[in-house]
Amino acid sequence: MSDKVYLNGEYLPLSEAKVSVLDRGFLFGDGVYEVIPAYAGRLFRLEDHIVRLNNSLAGIRLPLSYSVADWQAIFQPMLDSSKDQYIYLQVTRGYAAKRDHGFPEQIVPTVFAMCSEIKPFAGRVNGIKAVTLDDTRWQMCNIKAITLLANILLRQEALDQDCGEALLVKDGYVTEGAASNLFAVIDGVLVTPAKNHEILPGITRDVILELAATNNVAYREDVIALEQLKAASEVWVTSSTREIVPVIELDGVAVGEGKPGPVWHTVDNLLQTYKKSLS
Ligand SMILES: Cc1ncc(COP(=O)(O)O)c(C=O)c1O
Image (cartoon, rainbow, N blue to C red; front, side):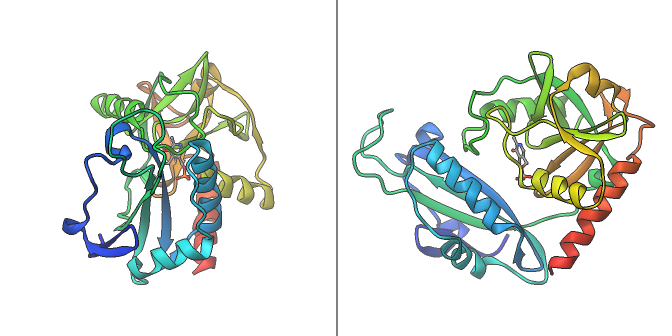
C-alpha cells in the first residue's frame, strides 16, 4: 500500500483517513467503486474505468462530474513506476445528519482512493477450482456497487469448499463469477455472456474480446447454459487484478484435461504482450 491515501481532496496516512459513522456508505452501502490496475506507474484503460464509474454513478443517481484528467491527477501521486499496483476508488453518497433511506437534500459525496500492490496470483498460471452456486444477487449487477454482501457470501461459500471462485447460476444459465467475468471454450469457440443487467461489464472482458477480434480467435457473446459450461473444454474467470484465470476443476470434475488449455495460453500471451506494449 502506498503510504498516503486520498480522501475528499487530501492525501493522508491511512491511519488518519476517517469518515463519519453517518456516512451513507457505512450505513447503507450507498456508493460505487472501481478497481483500476496500474502497470509500472501507468493506469490501464483509465478512460474505460471512468466511463464505467460514471455509468455506476448515474445508476445510483449520484451526480459527480470529474473528468478523466481530474481522476488521473488524483491517482498519480499514489503511483510508483517500479511496481504493478491497483487503485481502489470508492464514491459514496456521503454524510447525512439523519439516517434516512431517502436521499438527503444536500449531498456531498465522499471520495476515497487508495493504492495497493498487485501481488502475482499463482492461480493465473496454475488454474483454480470453482463451484457453481445460485446467483442470489440483485437485479442491477451492471452497477459496480459497494453493497457486496451476496458476492461476499458466495465467494466465502466457494472458499469453504476449497475453491477459488463461485460461478453463478440463474435460471439454468451462468452469469459470471462472484468477483469476475466468465468465459468458456465451447466447440472451439470462446464464449462469454453478453452485457446486460445481470453482469458487471468487466474491463478485462472487453480487452479479451478486442484481442480475440484482432487476432482471429473465434468468439461470440452468448448465453451459456449450465450443461454447456460443464461440457466446455476450457473455463476462465477474468478480472483486473487477476487477469485471465483458468478454471481447471468445476464442481469436483476436471475441466478439459484438468490444466490450463490452449485457448487460454493463446489469449493470456496476447494479454501479456498487450500490457507490455503499453509501458
Ligand atoms: C462481479 C464482478 N464481475 C466482473 C468483474 C471483472 O471486472 P474487471 O475486469 O473490470 O475487473 C469484477 C471485478 O471485480 C466483479 O466484481
